[in-house]
Length: 476
Image (cartoon, rainbow, N blue to C red; front, top):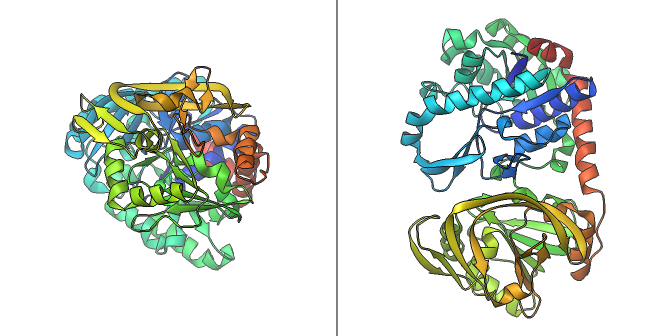
């Protein structure tokens, strides 16, 4: 198959960004290229052109390739709902809720779907750049693995191992991986690269040669820290970061199952906005101008989490002081008076009181709404996507937040509390400008153009420091 796979020595070593940059580099060389990740675990999901959902990292990689995201690019997506269980998405559609031990028994069925999706992508493109998950060194997970070597062996795809020097011990990361994995798995690895180097890369020349000598693997280069990584959407909640601006203070509550948090990236990029990602155990600051309740994979679970932090009391005080509140998707549902879940679609069946800041009621249902939408909000064009269970109705819905084209969301009578099911709305420059103008600050246009420019700069960065031609030659 015309493919190469980037696996990592651990989680969060930069695999997603490396694949995005290589995809853009391959596209600029005139190649028809597509991304692929056999299995992803993330609550940050994108709605695809074929009406399913995949990890948003693969949607960014598709953008780097100049493609619409498709479910085949990430056939298995795990969306954690509890510490032990997750919703299981196969080729864009939810098929089960499974705990970790049950998930292992499903893997033979899932591998068939993974290989089917990979075969379709490979047939349609000159090269596929594959991203692993976690690390192949997690040898306790090797039986029935579909994310790393299990996939690479089944599909016959060569592997390049990425190590993260920023976290330290990169020689042990790479040499140790070879030491613990099966010899046949190790034979799939054609080389390694070093990621996230700070300082002069020549200072690592001796270490680089040690890795080559000890493993017998070819080195493909040392990638310095990419300073503009903040301009690209983050994949994992561990990457959540505050904005760099000052001025309007926007506080986002970092829920335990926060989902689709890249909704906030355009706000974080605004120079007149100071974005605080508020972690558990911290009170909502008294100087907050706007508090955002983001999306969540577990509305009822995170509503309980929110109350456990005392944020319900803080929100009420914030509103009394004249502050603004915006709820997106699950956050919108929390703002209502009641959330009913008669069938246990979101957890235990029953009914829970909401925060009462909007006069609406939500009823959960097992069916999930997955759709891309366009319309207007605040008199400006807006586009985005919906990905949620439940329907919300009530008096405040008579003042919809948007029309996409049917009325969406609700606004309180005083105009300071709003809710919407629309994800991605802040990416539209005109809407974002209108929204921020109502809060008294000016907006800087060009967010989407900035993402594309950052992808080009990332590709330039990799072309400078990696043997990109050699990596692509492995695939072809």
